[in-house]
Image 1 (spheres, rainbow, N blue to C red):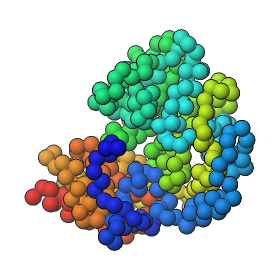
Image 2: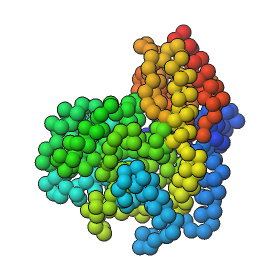
Image 3: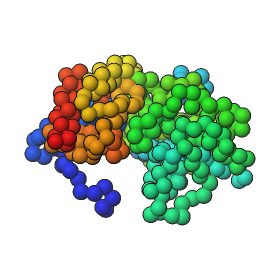
Image 4: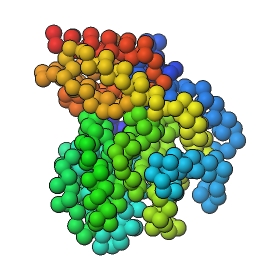
Length: 383
């Protein structure tokens, strides 16, 4: 169906940071499937885990448990317990949108029939199901699909006063990102997440963190919210947790998760053995490599190289989720297209900002090569 527009390339294979099209041409992938392939394309550890599992057990229904999904749930919970100090429970999904859908349903179950509103921010992105689209703070994306589900409210990003004014007796939860990825790679202002946490504490609303793009080491911490002094009540995950295998998760502390009862939510493929085998391999490999440290050090190198480029006015983001804001008059879409012709994959996340999110395993020499390509692309567009 024509929802993505005509594809610009036919990609045949990948290895690490490199992709190759059907003509054999090489590209440096500095988008990583939109912050998904954090351990690189065709990572041998992940490939081996998927291959081994495929010959043993792929799927059983949720009438039964399987040890692979159980291990994965415990691994995800261990990471979030370490980050929050709160032991919790996990619901596995097939995507980030479905993880946020689960969080929204959990918030409504928590709030009850009279407390159903979810507050999110303008510029946010939470998915394309009807409910997560309603939570997404981009009105232009709403227009073709009205009427959307009711019970969603949007406030300006970073405005703590507007957030406080939006919370009334109908609000069950606040759904927020630590960095607005699709909104232009815009981190939460200093003190903002802490301010939202205080409002939620005072009003009893859940603080739900969408870590779909920022989780699993991408920002230089295991989770983006760790850059602030906050403990969320719900965390949603996807993208990097499967290194390309479609899987997401909604995590909540035990006392919050207990608002769900059997039959309240479900998914045929929740916790399927094949996808959770990838999760187990990703967690083990990321811990072995110290993924946050890799993102921090390589992100600092990339940031410095980009900051030196003529045509780059500002840099935003943390770790290896960076937005290069271009000088006035330089169209980010044109720069991304020129870079692609030269063998570099990035994207224009807004009309003025180039998003860079390479695998955490990217080398410094690949960073230097990518920056040189981007420099040539900017010069071409300027001329």
